[in-house]
Image (cartoon, rainbow, N blue to C red; front, side, top):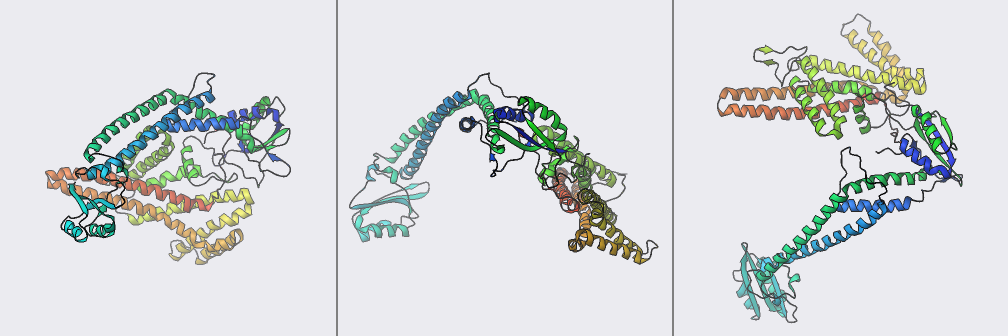
Amino acid sequence: MVLKPESMGKITLVGPKSYREAVVAELHRLKILHISDHAKTDDIDVGSPLEKANELSEVLVKIRSISSWLRVKRKNNSEELKIEAGYDLGALSKKLYLEVKQKIEQLREVEGRVSANNSLKAELEALKNIAIDLSAFAEYRSIAYFAGYVKNLDGIENRLRAITEKFELYAAAEKGKNVIVLFVEIEKKNEAREILIQHGLSDISTQNLRGMRGRAHDSIRALEEEKSSLLKQMEKVTGSMGKLRLRYEKHLLFAEDFLEKELEKAEAPLRFAETKNTFVINGWVPEKDAEDAMKKLNAAGKNKIFFNLEEPGKKDSVPVKLKNPGPVRPFEFFMDLYTMPTYRELDPTFLVFLTFPLLFGFMLGDFGYGLVTLVLFIALKKKMPKAKNFFNILIFASIATIFFGLLFGEFFGFEEIGHFKLPHIISRSHQVTELLYLAVAVGVIHINIGLIAGFYNELKSHGFMAALYAKGGWIVLQIGVALLALSYLKIIALPIYTGIIFFVLSLLMLLKGEGIRGLIELPGIFSNILSYARLMAIGLSSVKLAEVINESATEMFHGGGFLILTGILLLLVGHIVNIGLGLLGSFLHSLRLHYVEFFTKFFHGGAKKFKPFGAKS
């Protein structure tokens, strides 16, 4: 059945520890068992990893470090990575690790020297126009000195002379700023600094200049030559690392993939139960694969493996494997985004497949927009194969948009092209009230599909009467309200108390089925139904914006000349923006209607996804 997850069997494997490794290898190859991790108890311990686990882990860490250093990236293609038989991965990792590590250390050393070179050059650049030998920046007992930028030099020398005659001031301009170097007797250090601060002092570091000699501009030339040499060294090291990457890239990718699998197998017994002589594996297997899997595992264990296969118990937390045909499978994306259905409830994927594109198309609802988005998503699907499932959803949504575009008679917001009026069933621009009624009717249908699905779930879990009270009560409630409204408006010739009887009956059913919570949530179903009015509102906003764009562009076309080009640009940009807004709004609101209004009528979820041992996540 499409609406049900894959049938699962609860399986237990018991075998002698001497065949543990062979059984694990076969399980990894088969990829059909979802292992239930064993928790240590007083009676039975957790298993120990295979002997080679530590060695594999160490080699894998080295391989990953090498790949990171060499910037080796996993490929997205389907090419199977192979290397020559008998290749010693341990030797490869050890030899290459040492070689690459040495080059990384060289590179870091050179990068450190380049950084120091840049810092020193920055200090010298500020002082290159100061006529002073760098040896002056030394430690003195009786002299203090300052170097920095000041906002202005006016009167600075006279103010310094007012506090002492024992000073030397050097000044120059550098990139529009005033650079000064001041030497002053140490007793007047604080007073001199206060004067400089009043002139807007911004200090220049001279820490790296101690021990240097000669003029700053000469040292800058030497630093530039040194930096050029350092950059050549960096280029040489990175070039050699690039050659190593080209030479060993496939080996490293293969090694990482191979070691991950081997380590997963080696550490698998940590998830088992174990005694001195036996191992026990508990897990879940699809029923259709169980018999074949037991035969192959028994062969791997030399016919010494004991199996116990049983149906899931009511309290078992069964992992869920969704089972949907090809066209429906992309819509499992919404379940991954939300949560997995529990094992015994309906899988909503097929229902979402039927309704999501329709709600989306109802909102976007333009034939032209549907064609553009259809072509766009087909192209993007080819360009980004990893996201093909997502684009398949949008392709279905675009087809629905084309369908509703024909019903609404819209082509890029136009209902009339030239003198040809596009045929339509309902006009979104001129029949807003009818469109609102249609949107609410869609809500009623969608909500009740959810209630019917909820009836089935309750029937399977708690029996017919529980399902009738809990879900049938909501349907009876809607019938009662509808009869009350139709009788009151004299649309049907029924006594008004007929609707009241149905209404009261629904209250009793809900109280019995869902308790006081059902009565509290009574207004919720009507707000849920009215929430579908957004189908009209989102669609109407899109078509009105399209009309504004078209009308503005038409006025420009009548203006002639340059305005024609402006009008074409307005049409192009305006409709692109409107399509973008329409896609975003239609997608998000359709998703909300499913998650909030629809799913709450039947869906609980919360199950774990089926993850077979050996399968890549």
